[in-house]
Amino acid sequence: MVEFKGFFKSAFTVDNVIFGFDEGDLKVLLIKRGEEPYEGKWALPGYFVYPDEDLDEAAERVLQELTGISNVFLEQVKTFGAVDRHPFGRVITVAYFSLIKISDFTLQPASIALKAKWHSVAKVGNLAFDHDDILDACFQRLKWLVRTRPVGFELLPPKFTLTELQHLYEAILETELDKRNFRKKILSMDLLIDLEETQEGVAHRPARLYQFDQEKYDTFTAEGFSFELKENRKKEKLAPATGESP
Amino acid sequence: MVEFKGFFKSAFTVDNVIFGFDEGDLKVLLIKRGEEPYEGKWALPGYFVYPDEDLDEAAERVLQELTGISNVFLEQVKTFGAVDRHPFGRVITVAYFSLIKISDFTLQPASIALKAKWHSVAKVGNLAFDHDDILDACFQRLKWLVRTRPVGFELLPPKFTLTELQHLYEAILETELDKRNFRKKILSMDLLIDLEETQEGVAHRPARLYQFDQEKYDTFTAEGFSFELKENRKKEKLAPATGESP
DNA sequence: TCAAAAGTGTTCTTATTACACCCATGG
DNA sequence: CCATGGGTGTAATAAGAACACTTTTGA
View 1 (tube, chains in turn blue, brown, green, cyan):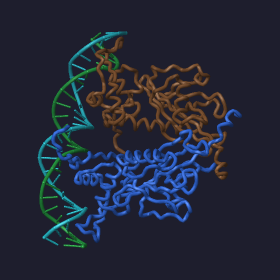
View 2: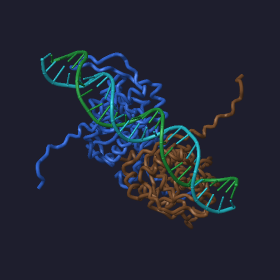
View 3: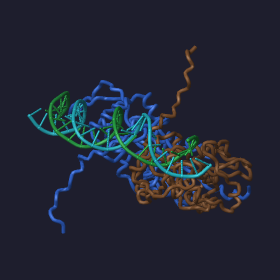
View 4: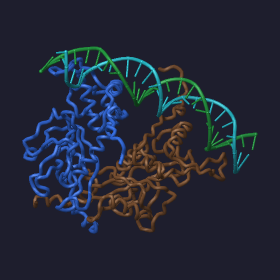
């Protein structure tokens, strides 16, 4: 047994990729580091796992302390353990991702939250540690998950329009979808409840509002579904012909 | 910085779920533990990660030391970190799964390998530590992966029959498939090369042998594919009618 | 000649794709 | 009355599901 003692010199952390959706754009919540290492850089919210704490608990704690919310979608994605990923010693990190409705969210007064800010996923880069890789892995997972489960709804406010839902899918899948086919498919799933209300105060024909049917949602979450739609090829605009090539 | 010191008292291991396929049955390689804790119980092969070793490296080492093979399918699945999962202290484990051709495999002379044995996945239970959970998570991952990538071929010998391939899919998906539809689908992928050879010495019409097309295989591995076939419902034999109900 | 598994096509049904115009509102 | 995004249906194609009999071999 003594032979194993040399191994008990490591630490592990959790890092949480918190996704939100706003203004047609997929966002991630980042924190500006106020201390070394990587002081001043943006990083994923995370912390050491306490000795008496399970991994999932630690991930929930990080989320709760920062945003004040709990009981939201939270799932382990991958563990990152390169030898030199942390300058303080051997630290592996278990990456989680969560999906929250930005409308539910209020930054907590904790000091850590003072430096938090939503960033557009498409534009993020050059984060602290190996957080670029972690974000990428979580985004890929989300991309996969959205085709298999109705996770998109975790990100929308309680009432939403079909166009908002479509924009969410387009942001996650990084593609454009055909409006009619999208609507036909999503409505045929019988997952939405038509609230028979419309938007107000918009400078165009107001859209119907929907909410999702919690029971159907739970069924789909448990059994999975298949959301596959081909990219809308109408937007493949050809570059203007340039005449002869050199 | 001193405040963090208290965290550097943990260890981590890798555990490897090594799948193989033989006699129409999906197998997993287990080791009978020769020491405490859980002495005498079957467990997944695994070991502590060395201080200067990446996680993926550690998983490869465990596989190599046990089976003598490397450069096979090996993928991280999930990390298990319940507080009390290991009696020696806080030890989290990163689970990997690998797929090997049993035909390529020879147990290494290392002492650890003396106690290794293939077990039918369907019948395994009551393993050491939380290894039942780990095996289950890896099996679920395999089940998903087989519908998305042609991983099945990692498990078959270089030459195989279509029926063997079908049995492999059935074992992984825990379902039965229609022979004609299976063949139509798999052949239409243009992934197999017909070797124009047949089995010998079988007491029935000998089957054609195939190998897979490495180039196509790589393409599908990179881009993914969709293998979806409904369970063959012909086997849903109705229980004999029992006359009137109470 | 029997048992055992191999091999093979067609029809039906369902899901997906492509695509263009009118509608309701606020400014 | 104009700009903006909302809302709608159909035909063509492709993919999947259901299903049963003949062939080849060894014992």
